[in-house]
Amino acid sequence: MARNIRVEQLIQTPVEKQQIELVERKGIGHPDSISDGLAEAVSRALCKEYIEKCGVVLHHNTDETQIVAGRSHPKFGGGEILQPIYILLVGRATKEFEGVELATESIALKAARDYLKNTVVNLDQDKDVILDCKLGTGSSDLRDVFRRDRIPVANDTSFGVGHAPFSELENIVYNAERQLITDLKPKIPGIGEDIKVMGLRDGDDITLTTCCGMVGRHVDDLDHYINIKEEMKTYLEDVSSRYTERNVEVQINTADDLKTGSVFLTVTGTSAEMGDDGSVGRGNRCNGLITPNRPMSMEATSGKNPINHIGKIYNLLSTQMAKDIVKEVPDVHDIYIRLLSQIGKPIDQPLVASAQIIPEDGTSFSKVKAEAEAVMDDWLSNVTKITDMVVKGELDTF
Image (tube, rainbow, N blue to C red; front, side, top):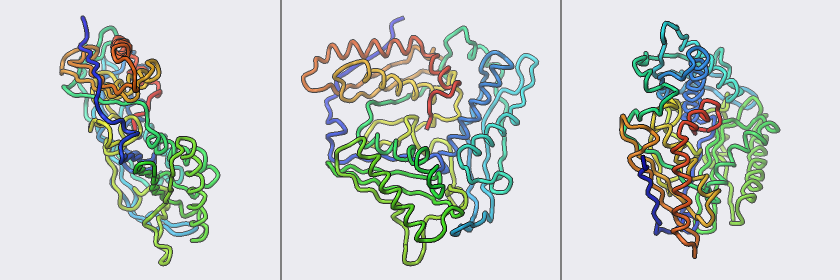
């Protein structure tokens, strides 16, 4: 059956040439990102258990994780949690299949603990957090939907959106937080995981506003705190220079009042300890960014099942399609992919698979169009590859 693939030329100013561009990333320790990470970790753990015990991924959705902030008293050289963070793992999971009982809650709790241990390293799980799990029962009647020998049908009438390539500002914002965590934090343990990066490009001037919760036990005093900020500033200026020749100004923790000593200090490295709640889907899209200059889907990706949940599959798929088209098709300046499903219809046959392309100047659009269509059709022909990539942990969802 021929697929409804539509590729059109987009007459629009490319993002890089627009006067104002905004890009945001909520780091892995932000309460919303912690919610995303926990939801996805639980889903992947359930997928692994289902495959091992039943030979197939069963119906589940764990995309309703909620974080209720605690209270804390941070201080230089230490601090304490006064009221623990409360985390509720919420969703649906298949708990029995063809006579096999599955310990879904135990699996979910272990996956969540492992994720927290590896993500928020200064969080003491014995006293800083209460971890609760309430998984309802998924429907075992969906076994035909989840069979490996057929293309799954869409769980909803919904859409996914993706774009490529990243602009200079998108690359800076995406990599700034990630490299602070993986490269600079091991050298400066006072840097917490709760890092939010907001990028503004006004013409050729970029302002990078970074908010980082410092870890009190690793910060001796106010002078030490100021020194860490200066080291972060210098580091982020270097990171930015790898992606742009534009002027970049880096500002860190702009709400600090050094005269009164009011600074962004934490006990654990996340603001979830002191008033910031978190929910799945309120932060980064599946490409790791929040990009108001680009089309976006508002649907959460993390925690949804990777078999037939369009909110997950089509957002990841559209993003991979866009990346591959930019990689394989010359002379594409910008591309936007939109995939629309119909509930009950096979996921390899979307109601429409739309590509909007801004070609490079002087490019023959007819050639670009045909090559883009081929990439899109190939992905749809192998749509279950997305499921395999998710289960193996090869795709980020936030």
